[in-house]
Length: 461
Image (cartoon, rainbow, N blue to C red; front, side, top):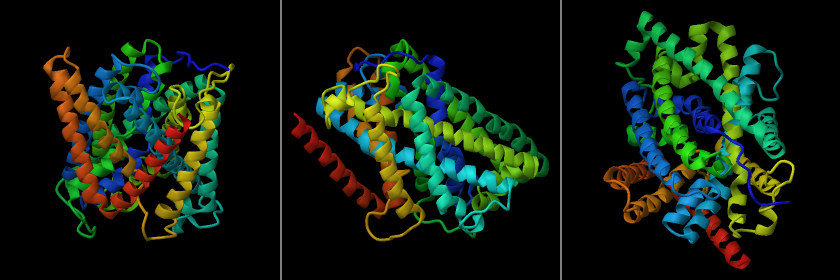
């Protein structure tokens, strides 16, 4: 056994990591929710996409500057450690390992399973489900639960047994997922302009949809999930060739691609179905309206593959999460979780830890958010609230960058970090106004888990 990761990924893989993790489920999974939160107001929904993209870009650019200077293991932990201190770096790493990475991995595994089942049921309406598809079998049925766990185990196996194969899988799924998106961008805009659907969607709303709270804040909060994931690319910084040069390029190029694809795709979807249809049936109805039932369903398969690529990218980070602490001699049993397999150069013990925590979060997500087996306290959205927490944890890093980096020019040192701070505060405010009591329940759980992490580390030392 050794404890040093090898550099195995190039610039293209890093770009695919950024684009492939962000563009995957969110554009399909949250597009419907964002339009619903605005009451079918398409211009307001597009404004929410623009605001979310601008916030992501400001944060992304600031971290790209940091990636040119600091590199150890797991970029975000490196930046937190360098800017704020080793203790803050530890808590950042603990948060990523126990809440952020595994929580998002569990949700994305479920989204992949859901779209896979929807493809199967659309291709074969007689496919037997214990809970019929019309009653939510593709969402909460036992087949969906089993497939979710299978997807978790599959992505874990790919990453732990062959990290190079996992990198190739990430690039392949990123290329594949661009096919339906580009098709919808072109065909949706042409189709919508030809029959007037696109123009009509921009001037009409859906009065039957009840809007609670501030619609713009709620929609921007939902875009946080769709735009999130780019920071995960920094988790493999120790494995990227010439990381200080290639990682910043990957972040910037990937960020620009993401924003452009999201905006044009959303407009394309608006040309394929009415706002009412999009809210009731989701973005897949636009594919069916434009391309017909058969081809539209084939494109649903592309969506499932797209989501699988996103899940794979999240699992890449999940498998390495506790290792980033163990490599620093911190966290639970660093002598165990810092070990790397001689053949695969993967932290297998860390990977098992990540898989188990992701499975635990899925149990919570299923019982509270999907099956709704309880409706009392400690019910919160694991797909959005951890993202808001990470924006909160970004702020001290940005502030310390402005205070410490005296050799940078004004734009790099002050302007972009200040915009990133403002954007992060906006995301936090949008979260509070949108989720209300859910924020309180989540913060209680967050504090308990972070306190447990502090106790474990002090006990270890």
